[in-house]
Length: 211
Image (spheres, rainbow, N blue to C red):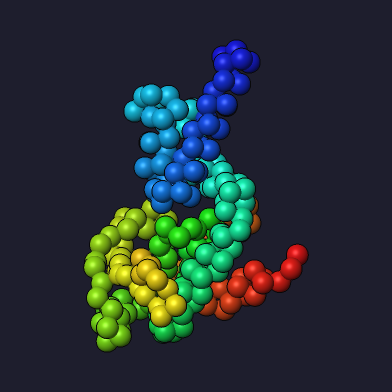
């Protein structure tokens, strides 16, 4: 492969990542859908060679850049509201070791984003009953295990607080305590992969503290 071809491939990969990031931030698309749509928009093809496709980490960095550039005036407040909502849910369910994951944790969430939580409890049925006792009607589905070990049960519902004009989608993935003990704590950039309620309170405090 010539140097010019390498440069063209790198440039096309960047363009797909940037377009996918815009679709995620503005339209609320998930990463896979945004990548497919961006690829069609940039290349006119539904499928391209793998070296042209950015990975999720590359797209995530472009989402951060897009939010910093185009939504700097609104994004911090939106992110904080989502994190506060997540903390409210975690505090209402203190016995199930809930941890925040995903875009609300890593800072790339927008007003389109759902809240993703992981529960590490001995009996997932107790959590399901607790939600029903609190008047929460949920749907049951499956999510791939974060370590790739098959599928695990997920409870999904809409949550509305008095100060929120629209309900927020919430997904609680049900794991066992041993899953947490064996889980990686940091990503490749040394950022936490999940936070419990105490860690989330610290993150919210840091968000208000001037750099």
